Amino acid sequence: MNCWLQTFKCGHFDVTDEPYALRPQDMITEENVLKIRQIVFVERRITINKLVRETKISRGSDRKILHDHLSESKVSARWMATLVDTRNETSERGRCCKLLQDFKIVFTDFFYRLVTGFIRGRP
Image (cartoon, rainbow, N blue to C red):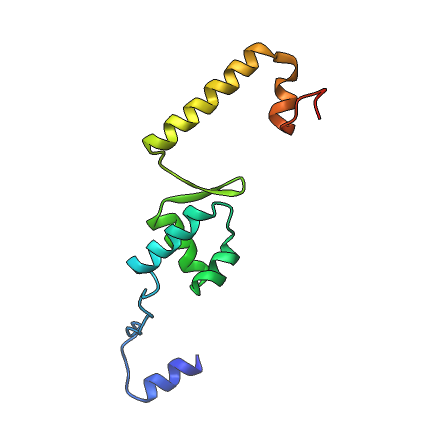
């Protein structure tokens, strides 16, 4: 209230907020987007904290670049493209077909192998 009273005493009778200078989004540039794209492409398991240390960009800007500009999202421990391109689609299709064949051949050990990555009876 004191702030309002002082502004009215000074002769400012406008009750709307005056425009204030917002900091421009200078960290979200094409150069930084490309830098983050290269880092994530090389190391898919990178964390936001490590990305902040390497790029010297704030957490919010890094996250905004990843999600909004690169369409990446964190899946398990990897950054994955939200939209699957044809190269990824064919490799994923091959992996799924291999899993399906393994499932049909060895039903009993399939889930054990899927979860642990090991085959029973083998070192």
